Length: 483
Ligand code: AMP
Ligand code: ZN
View (cartoon, rainbow, N blue to C red):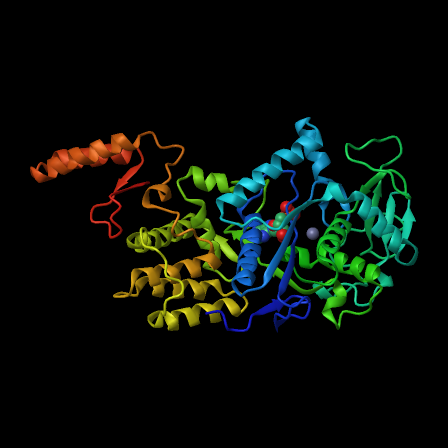
């Protein structure tokens, strides 16, 4: 059941809008991808879980999806507003490695996280350095009317487009939040679309252009890759909420200049009909960062014994537009919920799904699920519909399996792939093997049967010392967990 009309929140209009595709029957989506200079943190990965759920929902609703995610391997500065160094160049210098090796390494790291989180492969990963000639062409096309050259590069004059900054709802005059570090800029918000290599320097990544040797600006990259692959206007552009402030307003300005179109009262003049932004994952202490405190990589969660899909579930339990606070307790609760789900599908493991059969008993939960996803991807409510479907009793198992598979196609929790065994991940620090745990638990069972509680308690203490918590009478039937 997929009849509920899909609506989503457009950051450009700040309103819920019906999804009406540019090309009938199709959905074309562009997602701003990672800058591959470092490990992604789990906050970054929230952005791709969100984009994945969006893509899955569009497919589920019957649209032919073309999803593009880019890989930024050049041009992203340490400050979004045109200040600082290229993140890639800086990391390469710090690690005394070639920038190309750094890019390749962190791209693979990112893709491993993508796979672990059940994020589907997009139709295309566009890599910025593969599109430099197109970027130069794009810049040439808008240079005369919209840009000016300074010693350090070619700059976009934001006063040459109508409604600059509308996406951010920014007051452009004072260029709030912009670092006006470049002498000669006409407006504080003007940004480089081509950064010239300073005289006497060579960068590891640089190309010839009409404005001298140098490298493209980060904003230019996304305008070019999205337009090249999806064509303007396309349906949906996504990114994290920080991109609503600088990166996406700048992409929009370039797109307006490129398409020779006018104001943003018609959202599609921005290059995309709908702009969607996920809110941040935050730490209790504040914003998530790659440099301060505990660096929350997906691998750290796994090292501590949490299955990556528990993190995916944690993301889905919140609305994508709400801030989500990370805590280990919250992650633990998500893991328990995922275990319960996997236990509940256990009896359906060997059943053949009957997708065509009538499933009247499931009609209300399917309608609830559909309405929730259609309502700006309300995954939190959709999950409760999934729970209700899992709890339906006295139904044909094949029908039940088909219903759960259908819901999981949208949520991506891999409920039929996971098992009790694969969900239980050994923390890296655990000092005991599973065989040893099993032996100890068998000995403890014997001791208890013989009413030798001192021995049974001693075995329990040994296990606790080795990081294993014994869970007598655990409702999920898990008799131990890694503490
Ligand atoms: P970056 O690699 O820095 O370009 O970021 C990749 C994506 O992660 C972008 O869409 C960001 O907007 C997004 N992002 C960054 N930090 C967070 C966070 N704490 N929570 C959610 N998304 C984030
Ligand atoms: Zn981008």
